[in-house]
Length: 207
Image 1 (cartoon, rainbow, N blue to C red):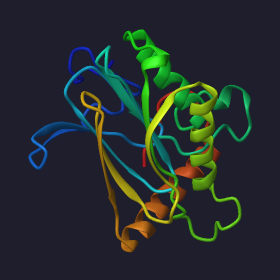
Image 2 (image 1 turned 120 degrees about the horizontal axis):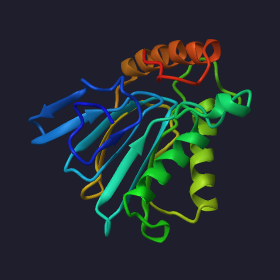
Image 3 (image 1 turned 60 degrees about the horizontal axis):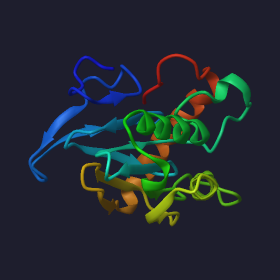
């Protein structure tokens, strides 16, 4: 648990200790998630992230009063084995998010899920683009785990900014203009190259 996290919160990486801020537009304390991170909370927080080809799953149990969000970049490890044990990969990001919710009293049959992201923002990727693979993976995962999907905003070609309120399940999605697509694509590709060069163990790589 990071030293600056509110009591009762759990965050995946100690690198995300200074990203909390107050957003006067929503009158809410906000936490920004970067690729490879996830957040589980029982506090009245707003979780925020920006997605291009990445996908975020937002899950909550309204009875237990706990919810969270992840941000993953690839459906699964490109090499398999221990390198897949990182929240930058969808298979691990979903597992650790759900398990942390269970630790807080959530139950599978009460979980409500919302999915967002998977845009085709990376230039030149027209055949089996990573955004499509991320989105299809998330949909298949929820179906296999029998978790109710209550809303989705997937695919298309635009980047998105997501605001999620675990306490109420409210999600706001802003589709960003075309100029943002290039910026997000460059950032994602830079991060993806670092993923290829570096092992998954240890702290989450930020860009």
